[in-house]
Image 1 (tube, rainbow, N blue to C red):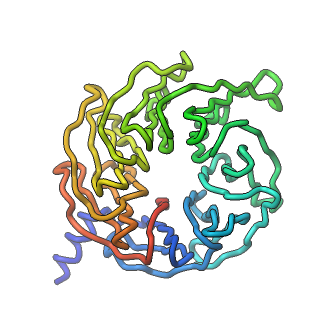
Image 2 (cartoon, rainbow, N blue to C red):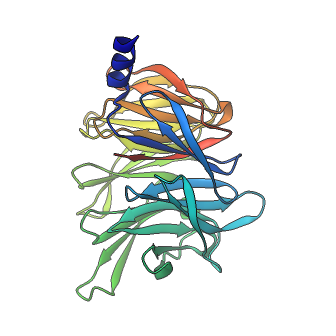
Length: 315
């Protein structure tokens, strides 16, 4: 029995890692032991939590809302399994994509067509920047903090902000892509942005230095939801919400390798840092599919609550 438990822990990448999972229908964040798949605790959030990011100690949850637009961010102490604050970001509405950089949480406000930044030290919104684009959805910040990217579903464009010589000034480049870009990912080397279009089954590849699309792939998805690149930069995973599949691409060859049925309405994707596996939030069937990235086979399921979607990894 002890040997079996040890092997399970090794295969699941136990160490001291923790998996955070948002359950949209339950309005909770589940704290999961990835070694056993056991839910260690749940924390109530605002209605319709969609995306979560963490600095390793705190989790920041965008409470998107359900029928009524949300206007709060939950700040959660992960170790204590407790919500510390529910920050009212009004008049901003529909906080969605969340990304932590330098201890602060950047988030999108879809209704307001902007990105904003929450500082947990002061418990205040300390910066905002308008995109002027429709449905500003996901946000990513480069490691040096000098570039910010957003996907803008309704404007069919990726926004690229670059810090000017005056640190307070930002320059905006709007890069047209396909229909309904929702997912966005920066390649591990920082040279490319990949975005999956939710409305035309395509993927656009943007050269960051050139600030333009340099390649497109028709992956024939019915409704792409999320796109993630493996840490080694070799493969791309796309969740196809309407087809119930994960599409795997060879990034260098820019071609499809495999389609993997995972269940009803797959949404969020999280790839663990060592690149051994991915978790797929199968929203319609209320579980996470565990995908082995060497064999490209589903090897397990984890149940965390109703409507799983956004995830984050704590090492």
